[in-house]
Image 1 (cartoon, rainbow, N blue to C red):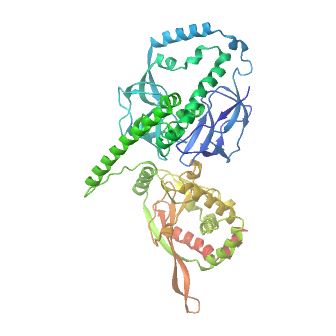
Image 2: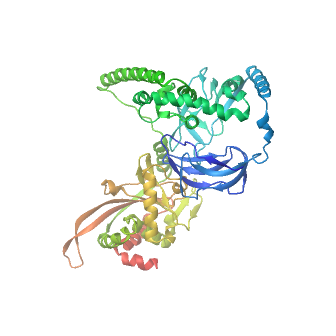
Length: 547
């Protein structure tokens, strides 16, 4: 029997994601916890594992399509689904009760200390920083309770507990670097807890489970209807703080998780909170929520008053984490190992601006945003063909120089998570229109902080557009291991002499090159820049070379 795998909650407030890559194909046999697909949210790249062993029947989305949370992602036939014995439905109440009693007795007599292994938390991420432990050694924690906040070079991630139990040991201190696939903390698991938490209806014959469930749910629904106004009025505001597993339980019980008062830190909702909300009278839950809200309001008022009093003449310390921390390390490595030199030039953009103005209106009808960047990239690609030295990479000890046939031109983007440098692949093979499409896509993704790892890797030379923020001249830092980078200044209308000696207004842009002086000298960068400049100042010449 084929079953649908429902895409679970993959982040707070995330309702859809992009299918980046299928890691399996239709007809393929997969095992439990095997990675099935890479999906990209607006926060990070997430890998979706299989829940069962079985055969993939159908993949519901193609690569690049948008998948919806809580909707089928793929269909599969689990092992044993077809040949499942029907005799199970005839199991007697006595047999189930006997088995349950035996299991309970065995589980209650044993405890186990288990290491929680830090799972994959993003594509290509092998380590993360411990930002804050949310529990301490000796604490009793519940299943799905948040245990620790960790910071990767892409995002802040919260790690939940897989089991209920007692925290025995925290393997890392706050601020230390934890390794993926290595023990993060140790937990003592009481074997009887999971059994004792099982619903009472499990002792009934299998065939009678469904009627019992419907009978039980009916009074609850009546209570919910009777106290709906009170519940909504006292429900917590904003997004519910809960793990995907807890949200799944809420959906199964048809409970609005936003109405469930959380008993965890910062109002986090646990599985037991959802179960209690589903079973308890709504009026009681509402009263508890009102009391909690009053207490929180009092505490917040006190905290705000204290903060206001302390703000006079105070200071604020902010940790450097994530993308900013990764960029800081990269810049230090680049400046400390590469001897930079800077070369500046000005480019007359008057003719190119006129050409772009004509083409912009034409391509706007095709929903193509034509900026100046595609022209810069295409002109640079044409110049690289004659000066391949600037499209190279040098090894750490400067004993080898690698020349690249592909012109993967990067562009620095000021995103909400920090400076990102995605690159347009194979510019030498693309038209200006194709480059424009890629520039638009990468810019939008980068500004939202959801650019893929593939788009960030493989760059061979970089353009930084500081002029968009108003600068004219800069000393850009090379994006190691590349050997050159250019910073574009702002466009200015300045007086210049024409061929007749007359003064006229021209659109002038200052550009600043930084080169790796170990492999590029001043003459090389000057000749390369002059050729690039000639294509930009005479766009018809550039079009002729593209043919």
